[in-house]
Length: 63
Image (cartoon, rainbow, N blue to C red):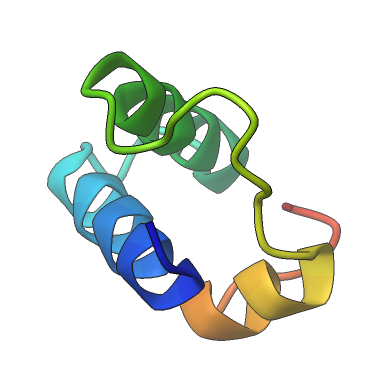
């Protein structure tokens, strides 16, 4: 899976989660969902902190 596809998948998953859930938990849940659905395979490299933060429009601290 490319970085762009992964970021899109994580972004959609985060948007689908209730907004009262903190962003860091929404991000964690979105990544876990990608793993469970096999969209993120074993050994896959996640984008760097800066790339994720910028692409998702969230703080690097949140990532």
